[in-house]
Amino acid sequence: MSFNNRTIIFICIFIVILTLCTACVFNTDDLVEYVYKIITWPHANKILWIAVITTFATQFIVNLFDKKKHDLFIWKIFKKFTEPLYSIPTFGIAATTSLALFKGFYLQVIMDKGKYFNELETVDLWSLGIVSGFLLFYSLYSIVTALLQTASKFTSREVKAAP
Image 1 (cartoon, rainbow, N blue to C red):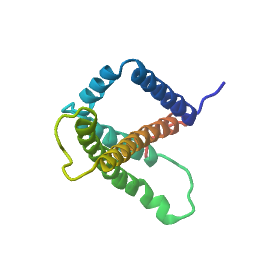
Image 2 (cartoon, helix red, strand yellow; image 1 turned 120 degrees about the vertical axis):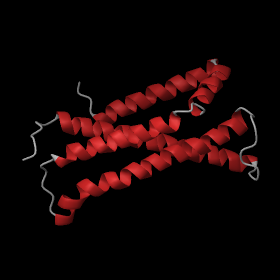
Image 3 (cartoon, rainbow, N blue to C red; image 1 turned 45 degrees about the vertical axis):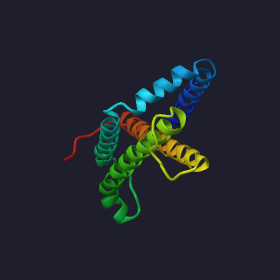
Image 4 (tube, helix red, strand yellow; image 1 turned 60 degrees about the vertical axis):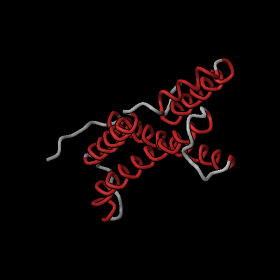
C-alpha cells in the first residue's frame, strides 16, 4: 500500500482530532492546562516564524533546481522568487496574529483569566475563537503541506548542481 502526502496528512489530522476528542472527554482540566502552556509559551511566535522561514526558504532553494517547463515567461522567471517573498510574510503574520487572538480568546473565555476583548459579547468572542483557531490551523497546515511537497519534490528526483 502506497501513501501520498495527502493521505499522510489526513491520517495525522485524524489522529490529532481523535486524541484531542478523547482528551476532552476524559481529561478536560489537563487539556485546558496543556493548551494554556502551549499558547502562553514565550517562544511560540519565534518558533512559528522559524518554521515559516525555513519551510519557504527550503522550498525556494529546491524550486531553483526544478527543471519543469512552464509556458509563460513570467512564470518561469518570477514565480520562483515571488512565491517565497509573499508566502513568508503572509503565513508568518497569519500564524502569529491568529495565535495572539486565539490566546486572548482562550484566556478570557475558557480559563477566565482577565478581560482581553472588552467590547465583545459572548457570540463575538466565540466567533473570534473559532475564526482565529481555524486561521492558526490553516497556517500550520499550509506550512506542513509546503514542507511535505518540497520534501517529496526533493526526494523524487536527482538533484543537480547549478551551472
